[in-house]
Length: 104
Image (cartoon, rainbow, N blue to C red; front, side, top):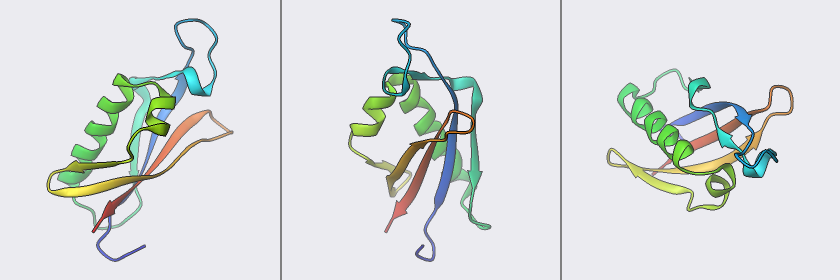
């Protein structure tokens, strides 16, 4: 990891079943109530962290998971470019983990 970069891991609670009852990872909505964010660097910009978390929460509510996986993965917040580096579903608890890296 480059010095000065911001790396966040955001976990978007257990995936809920889609409205058609089929469920499944690619067709599920992300539940808003269980979003949490863990910052992996000791020194991080709290303001930027909050804006990033708010943006991803809004994005997750407005899109289905498969849209989040396939859409443009670079976005601009507060004067910085960020890239979604990895999106994965953890096997143990069914949470969606998103790794975000600030681009220089």
